[in-house]
Each structure stands twice: as structure tokens, then as C-alpha cells.
Amino acid sequence: MAKVVVLGAGISGHTAALYLRKELGKSHEVIMVSPNSNYQWVPSNIWVGVGLMTSKDVIFPLKPVYDKKGIIFKQALGMSIHPEGDEKSDTGFIRIKYVTGDLENQEEDVHYDYLVNGTGPVLNFPATEGLAEFSNSVCTYGHATDAWKNLEISLKKMENGEHQTFLIGTGHGMATCQGAAFEYALNIAFEVNKRKLQKMADIIWISNEYELGDFGMGGAYIKRGGYITPTKVFTESVLAEYGISWIKRAAVQKVEKGVAHYETLDGKYHEQKFDFSMLIPGFKGANMKAYDKKGEDITEKLFVPNGMMKVDADYSGKPYEDWKASDWPSIYQNPAYANIYASGIAFAPPHGMSKPMKSPNGTPIFPTPPRTGMPSGVIGKVVASNISYQINKGKTDHPHKGSMTKQGAACIVSAGYGLFSGQAATMTVSPIVPDWEKYPKYGRNINKTVGVIGLAGHWMKLFMHYMFLYKAKGKLGWSLIPE
Image 1 (cartoon, rainbow, N blue to C red):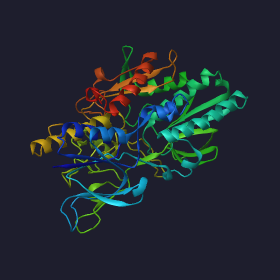
Image 2 (image 1 turned 45 degrees about the horizontal axis):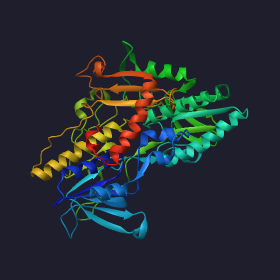
Image 3 (image 1 turned 30 degrees about the vertical axis):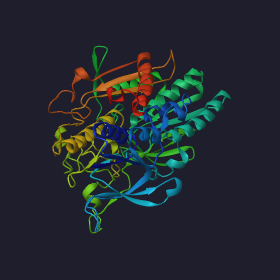
Image 4 (image 1 turned 90 degrees about the vertical axis):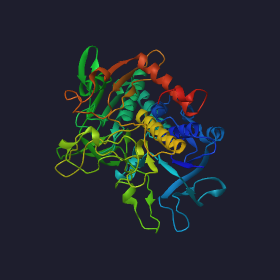
């Protein structure tokens, strides 16, 4: 009997657990370790943040799904990995601490034959002074619920004749998830305009991007209406249409009540006052340590300094000019321990997709690469299928590959929620990571990298909300729905 432990029930970890259970015989165990009792469909948090959905619309309890599927669920936090076992056993184990129920705060060693690290990001609010205290977030359904409560206050103030300034964007010089913040800015503008309050509002987009539309992917060229357009033009035109001004090349360094302090790439320092802000924090990996059989710290064998897990990628730190698509991983296997894998945001990218830049003061100001949504689901499936193959066949090769330099991705950017007035920008990129050797002109296949905006995109995003929740619940035919 083989035992597979999955850490983290986010999009990637949950996907991996479902496919492991589907592809492995009943004699094998699949164990999920997650501190969260609920699954959340993160892409719809922006709608919670403008009061058009509630937290109940984007979550469901995990335990009933796992009980039905035959997945063992431990609501606990992964504390440390012991890949060589200890003096009592040669089998690797993960040390966990329970976070609820009768076992709360008790530790347990869970042994494994294979380990999948799908822990996702830790929201690094402390990296920006005052960010947690004086700004909002839509990174979790709880955050988004609180954001709506505060946004509603601002909307009511405008209705009573009081002008409001909204500051939306990235809250750290190396933050990612520009797409989620961009959606939220557009949805706020949509709600303001719907209430005919646009004269009472200033909406400002603040970003660490060198040019708008970078989105941590180094930007892209897209086909739109028969023309090839850089995402810079696409993004700026959408913001202008919605009456949103912008600040780019900015690293927010401190947030106080009603004011954000930021540095720009030219080394100058600025302030921006606001009444309401939503600034995405930086991400880092789960705070796990690793120890060898003797109990000595080997964390650096498994993780890079920010806590993301090392996989089959090139971490040599070579210059930007030498970056290649082949630097990126395809099987997500840790190079030191062949039975440990990372998926989704938990894996450490070899480098960014955007050019790394620093201000004259030495402050890094550029987006780190996104790995959320569709790529996370695909990687979770690839990892699960390779592990299942190895267990079922008794082999060690990897027939399934999932490099982000080969994957395409579809992104639907909500630009306002309404049955007949909503809008969304639908964009596909292929591949996700640009390959300048294969596509020297645009970095991507321009015939598969397209963008359109309209009501149809909103309906598609709304349909995907329900479709992916259906899939995540493991209902009839769930595996037929693509990641």
C-alpha cells in the first residue's frame, strides 16, 4: 500500500488530491492536510468584495467531499518535512499541528511514500508596514467580505455628497496577482458608475509594473479586432474608458490611515491619499522547515529563501539576458528527494517573466510571475497523474509534463457584474511563459494569444464560477471539465 500526502487544499492541492484518489486503487491512501475547513474559488472573491456575491457563494466545506471520495482529511498546519525519516523509521514524514477540534495544538507525524506540496502563498502583509491595518484585501473570502463592508461605507458617503478617493493595486514592489487587483478596480468603477456617482470619485490604479498590462508575464501582444495590440495599450484604454487614472513603476513601502507612501523606479518618494484602498500584498512560501535523519536543518535543500519549493528548474541565477523557456520546470519534482513534488504557487519559479528592475535606492520594483488559477490546476493534475503512474506501474519516469512554457492559459478579467450590462475582458496567452527562441517576434504564438471585451465575457466568467465549483466538489463527470 502506498500513502500519498497532499499539503494544502487550494486550487492546485485540491485538484491533485481528487486526481490521486481517482487514479489510485482503494488499497492506497490519499491524505489531505490543510488548515482550512473550506475550499474557496478565489477568482470570484472580487465579486464578494463589491457585494455582488457573499462568502457562501465562493466556498464549500471540504470534509464532506473528502469523506465521499475516500480521502483522509486532517485539518492541520504543516510544520516541518522530514524526507529521510528519523532514527525510528526510514520513511519520510511531515510533522503537522492540528488547528481545530479536540486535537487542537497537538502535533502528529504523518508518514508518506509521496508528498505533494500545494500549500500556496503566505500573504506577506508584514513586508509592507501598515498594509494589514490600513488597507483592504480580496485574497481570501474573509478579506473580501470585510472589503465590501468598507467599500459600502465609501459608496454611502458619496451618495451623501462626500468625495472619495479609491487606491487599488499592488502593495509591495514585487507583488504579483495584478490581475485580481485590476478586476477589482474595474468592478469598483462599474459600481460607482452604476450609481451615477463618478463625479464624486477618484479611482487610482497603482502598480509595480514597468508598463501597464505586464501582469507579471512581461506583458503580451494580443490579436484584437484584426489588429495586434500590446497589453499596455489594451490595459490603458480600458482604464481610461472606466475613468481610472494610474501610477506605475511604484513600490508601496508604508501605509498609514488614509495615505500610502511609495517609491518609484526613478528613486523618488511620493504619497497618495485615499479614503478606501485595496492593495495586494507580496507572497512568500509556507513557513516550513526541513530536517534530515539526524535532525539537522536541511531547509535550503527543499526551499529557496522565500519559502517556495525547489523543483526541476534552473536556479543558477543567470543574467536576465540569458533566461530561456527551458529554465522552467515540467514535472515539479524536488531535485534532492524524488518522492517530493510541489504544485501551484508552492513551486519556486527559476526567475520572473518580467525584467527585474531596481530603483537607484536598491529597491526591487517589478512583478513576480503569476501561477494562480488555470496553471495551478493543470500542474496539480500533472503531479497527481505522474505519482499515480509510478505507484500503479512501479516505475520512476514521468509520462506527463506540464511546463508553463508549453501551456496556454485563458484569463477572464471581470469589468463589471450585470446580467445585461456586465463586461469582461477575455484573454488567452500561449504559452504562459514567453519563449523568445521559438517565437522571436512576439514571444508567444500570436494566433493563440487573443483578447476581446464585452458582455459575453461576463457571462463566460459567471458560467466558469459555477462550473469550477461543480468540478471542485467532485460531482458526476467532474474530471471531464478541463482545468
